[in-house]
Length: 589
Picture (tube, rainbow, N blue to C red):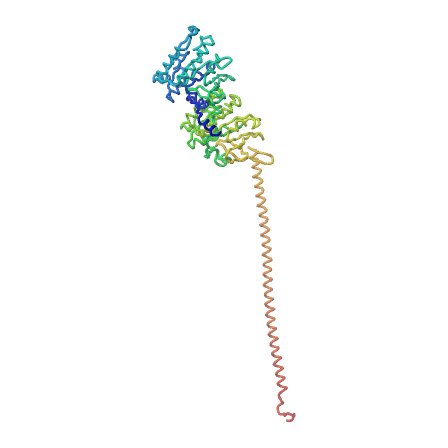
């Protein structure tokens, strides 16, 4: 079973496709239009059918070496060349080089006779000659309504439509046929979309006095395709379709960090700043310093030799440069060096899609390392919430594909809950800084803190944000029992704390002196006692010596007396034992 399934899947060949070369359209269709098959492009007046078809031919001849034939039934060759020149295309040059054939077929509705023998044989002969003359691979017929405008017989019209589409398939060319949109269906006749292998619907609508164009692939036989409605633009370089669902989350990432230009802010971000290629959002009410932070970030980048593209939707470039002088930033030298480009425009100048296309064009031309949008909310207000988020998503994905660091400012309304106004857009951002006002003691002060910073450790503490003539400084806010103190309240609290510290130091010095005095007094007492002790010890030694001497003298005297007594005893004994002189033993003389 598995082997049979694998054989079927391996034998299934992908549908051959013909790339249009139109930015975004090939992405939506998965590679282009069905090769060697007809595609119907329908829409109302002014939606860009002819220009899309003409660019299909020009891109094919210029980029893919596929010559083409444009057969028009409403505009002459000269008119087509002039109209397409507004897109920067040189049709006349391509015609001279035999890359494209322009053929204008004039048809008067009144000259068409509805008979049973009516057919398009003459058109086929003319078209076949044009294809064979240059070996064309692409064909455009503009438009069906002009070709069949005189026909009222529904049967003949349906038969000839089928025959036309079958002839193009048999000829083996990739064709675009344009048609006007009907009131109740995609086309006026209601048949073209059924015989076409691919159907693209163009729409030109006006909302809130702003015109926008949209494209939708209604049908694509044999291939998967984007089914959503995509905005597209007609600019001086052709059409540009802005797909959102075609961009995947597969961009590269970098571990390199870039400084913000504010040292204390870098310290709050782990000491190294933001990741290169990341998306950064700074939100705050008016006057909190969002543009100033953006300018510091821009200056830090250009000092590293990087190119910065600054999109401003509130201030002109000269005004930004002048205002930054007040904080010591000099941006004009970097503008002259070509490292900094400021693109300023009013949000109401274009629609949302036109602004986005203009930004894409500027980014592609300047190739910046950093892109700043100040403020992004000015653009998001031009459309619905989903359209604004879609625009930001497309811009962020486009920048991340090129490893471009993006820096967005967002103006919040005072009193709104933070997550209520910014949750939708902030989810797209890698880092989010919040600026807020603290009012009290008759003054207003700014504070800054980091709400999130993906992939890096960051501070969770509030810092006071100071703006002065010397630039920006981020200082510690006082946080105590009474809450967060900023400005003069923080300075007063700091002075009180310094006074308390000084008083404690003075009290400690006084206690130290008292202890020293007591120590000195005690030492004097100890010295006196030691002196008395030593005197008494000397006296004691003297007395001891005297006692010793007396004892020795007494001992000597006693010994002498003893010896004398012993001598006397011996003498007495001797006298008693010796006879008296002249007497005998009997006592006689």
